[in-house]
Image 1 (tube, rainbow over the protein chains, first blue to last red):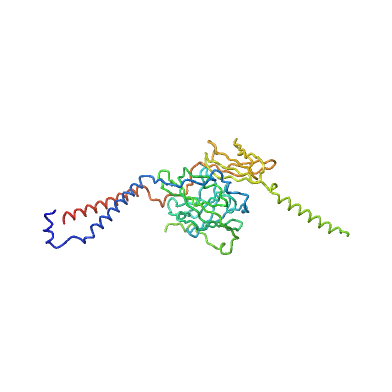
Image 2 (image 1 turned 135 degrees about the vertical axis):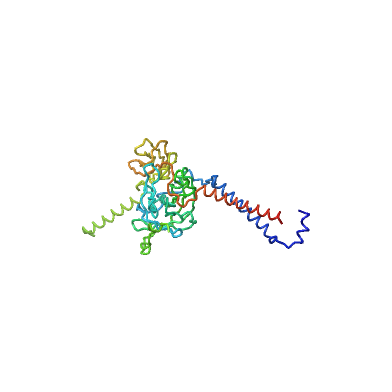
Amino acid sequence: MDERRPEADDRPIHRPEPAFRPVAVVVLSILLAGGLGLMAGSALPVPTWRWPDLNPFADDPFAVADPAGGTWLDRSTPTRVDIDAAGVHAPLVELGLDYRGDFEVPKMWRPHEAGWFEEGPTPGEFGPTVLMGHVDTDRSGPAVFYAIRELDEGDAIEVTREDGVVVSYEVTGIESYDKRRLPYEKVFGVEPEPALRLITCGGEFDRKTGDYTENVVVFASYTGHRKATEQDRERPLNGLHHFERK
Amino acid sequence: MRITKPVRGALAAIALSAAIVLTSAVPANAAITVTLSPTAGAVGTRVDVLASNCNQNATAVIEDTNVSIALPRNNNNAQGNFTVPNGMKAGVYTVLVTCGADSASAKFTVTSGQGAHTGGGSTAASGSAVLWTGAGIVLAAAAGMWLLRRRRVAA
């Protein structure tokens, strides 16, 4: 190499700009690392790390939450949910358990519908109201709760009840849990005030079982309620066509 | 002064309604309510049971099972807990609390322990697609490096 150098200096320079080579090396190295990361990420499960629960009252939910300590609403069936930040304007259906004892979910062919867990408290009653909706369907693409994983703390959620009361909440957190290890005491447990949880799917899609590995849970706390206004009543709902593949 | 009959009736009504207001203001007479936390769970889930306004030791049973729960008095309430026992079938159960002469209930749902099947997978990137994308990128990067090296040698 050293011998060739003086010779090379005599010739017209065909080499690219001097800065090109190091930049290319850096770019290619990043690509290489990224590609390796993708390969590793797809093959290995990603561990989720959480803060340990430091709540001293974790042992006794009623130490901080008194069901008789406030004037909460009476029972009334929720009929729709509106989340402007996620473009959700969905009708609600009643959900219980299916024949296997699993949570019942809205029909796969009705991706615009969300549901509420009928055995639990209704919005504005003391305790957690739980809504469930599909993240996607088996063929038509995104479904009603596709965008809820993008919600931020403080985003507003409104649930309208049959009696014409609109209960409002604000998002306090979003978590994703392994479906086999749902923390029931967190998701279905009480808070000092009426609470709302939205559940959809997340994690990897397992093609063998035809199911996602995780449940994404949006936690929200009560911020108040009002009588539905004319404007509330005129809000359009997203229909089936909203989720048809374009 | 002579009180006429209608006035006497009105006075009696006022006295009676005052008495009703007074008695209903006494917390001990408030209706007991039962609250569970959580309201649903799988086998092994610990469930706290609170009987509000039950100012004495109380007991609870899960109807149609042999589970009974002691709810010792705690301030103005009675409170205890149970753990969903092994072998308890998925379904909706009634937790019936007896507090002296009063009783009240709340519903608990035992689930299979599976999460909610809230997706069909049409927007999911399959694991092998990601793997092949990664492999493709690695290959492209390696080829680029090799080209760079070859050009350096050629130069």
